[in-house]
Length: 492
Image 1: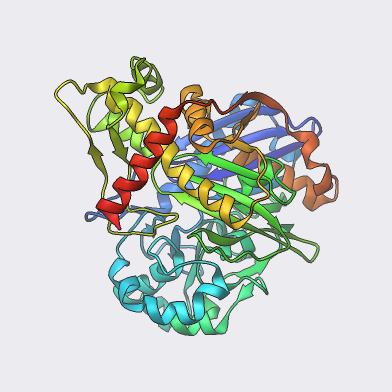
Image 2: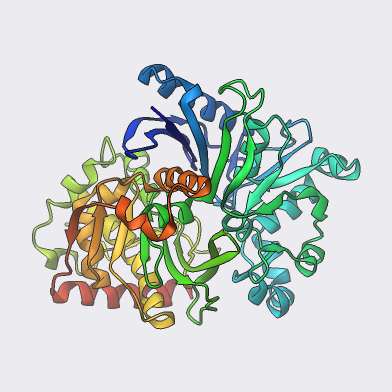
């Protein structure tokens, strides 16, 4: 049996999937979690040793449990948390903790440089100047880490997103490469050329020699060599940032196709084809993928907090013992009139699309003496759906050709949340049989890279599990109006 290995390096852990290359059925999967590091309020870091260990453990576990011969792996696909930023030397040794995409330490830098950046950078990158993206994180590392600064002076520095670090480790330092969907999240890549841009590099003061080479999304990135977890010679054939991997895994390869991924945060991507669409409503413009000279673009909406809000109910308020219990608790509220004024604003790390307020904080408003955990649980789910609906509303204005929304990620399995999303967004929600679409996307990407699957045929790999049609209930329109008004009062 020929096998495909997909490595999904996420915010809270690494999931490895082993698939049959012929049937694309999942043979086994394993997630290995690792610690989150919070040095100060608003700062979030990961230890690169922990990340590499989680990759090793997850791969080792599925190979041993499935009793599959790793020599039968014909391709590796990598997908990753995108903006999280690494600094390591040319031996592969980490020089500083990775700065995670959620980290807000560069907010002051962004505030003081925003007007100058907007004159040049916004159109080149499709991104606002925000702590979310990698460029300011790289600048911070060069300014504040003595080890990073010294490595830069000695021309012994690698600055990258997580994908390039993993390839570097898997190939024993032979290949320092990335691709456009990840590079487009750094604020250093030109959207028209899919290459590093000298004006942007000068703006942030980043030496291009510190950065990986940008390649197409489905190609030969290198082969395993003395990595300690896999035999030598297995080709790495597919790399995509996690949200673009989900777009690809959802077979959203036509203009107007849209997907929403519910993880720690929640992200929507809309395929705009070979057109660069510059949003007028606060959406991001980003690379979707590139292959055989074709550049495909997307509009993106970002909600920094989704599943993390449910985790907060579990870990901080102790309302539930496990995340799946939130749906049962929320379902205790059968009279929606009780919910008319209760809002959960899940802005623990600021607001993303469409307002881009990095200083915003979370809030629960509209409480009365009879408010209980059931109301809070339902408001939490509504807050997730309403945050995403802000992006859907923006999509409708910027790109009216909007197809049904395909969903994936852990919370996509929550029927109540999916019905809320359909009701608030007034779009049919389609949930596929495989909701591990992020890893699935780079697995099928390996076959594209090998020339064994055409992108146009990708929809044959997608199967519907359940759909949620929007209901006509005036409650949802009223709640949306309350949401919009409260955001304007509190955060704008």
